[in-house]
Image (cartoon, rainbow, N blue to C red; front, top):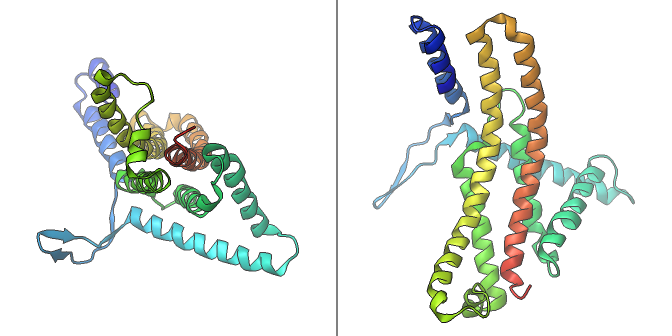
Length: 276
């Protein structure tokens, strides 16, 4: 937006209206990707804390995704019980679950991964459903909120620490974070580095999901905004590129669910099997 504004100021320095229009269009983009209140609930004050239970557009997307998961998987489970072999929706969801089990969780965690499958199934399908429903007109992207992605990353962080300590013991887990054979004088630096590493892993998860899901929508809105800034002659180009990015967003929606689940499985597996 700044580059486009500078270009207009250079080539049409007297046209302040056009410059203002570009700046306003930038605000228009931010307005459409920002969160909006849907249901305002009076806050609850507990001591010095304020608990806001209001439902925003992005929170609504999370609720819709959770309800869809319960309905679809409940229907698929009931349908599969009635048949010898799964068909239709039940077969499709089972295929995705087998993919998550055999191509994401097992290669990332190794042996003993079976008991963690419910967690990773929930993580994968929740992110996938939230990303997919955001592509429908009028919907918002729940995972384009840093609060949402940070919450998901925090769940992975807690799972990593809890099961790492559970399988290796409190002191054994934190001792295993330090590579063997490290000289004593390097040990204080390694402790700091490993501690920062524990924090940067969930941070990277949150930022990666948030940035990828936000970027696509900004690009689409920017391409559509070119119509209003450069005239109706650019409609074929603008709409064509917007459709291309929209199709690419479908791939990104699936890919981000895959990456988040795969990295979560990898981090938890590293914490549990420190000897590997």
